[in-house]
Image (cartoon, rainbow, N blue to C red):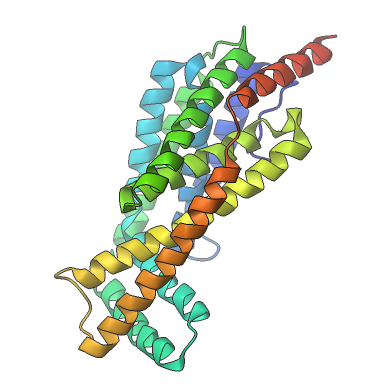
Length: 302
């Protein structure tokens, strides 16, 4: 099912349908594991992010529910994160190798990649342990489904709830943009990535009321989130190389890898700042969404 609220359905039913479909997709991934347990975990965690995005959008219509369930899904995703984080570092090195301009840089990165693979395998959660975590996650998903299926959302003025969440999200996003322009720290970029992820999910969830504009906004926001995702992985890699658990590499290899990671991160950060200024809408956008949702509902009732 598409990740989108249906404005032609009662608001309660529309919210439940999206939440349940995403959680059921996560259960199927963790049960069937067509490409192995690690990819199943990756797929499930993507579904969990979407459920959390949905609950942020509808929070004004069910504050306590949204707060509690957001925490539940966050903790659920974190319980499955360890192996994925190690894999992300390896993917980050491969990303750097694709952009390496010189052979000596690629050779150094290849040595780092090999060291990170050894590190991942040595620290990996055993497959049996990960299967147990997946089984526990399935149970938590079922609990979350039961809760949302019995939750009443304030359906009297859903457009007001959506507009309120939208306005709050845009305000938070603009603060994040100002923060990275003023002081480009790892934490500031991490916050900007979360804002971009939330914004593209909001755009997807209400896409039916403003298809062309929100499709473009969603694409731009997702591209920004993906860009900062690469930046985040590079920051994690640099911290590892600078820390006591750095892989055992020659000084020359270590220096080349670190310098390449820092240079690429600087390029990504500069692009992220430029792109972020264009991505997020103005406050009036929340009023447009509110009006369009109300008009769509009115047409359906007529």
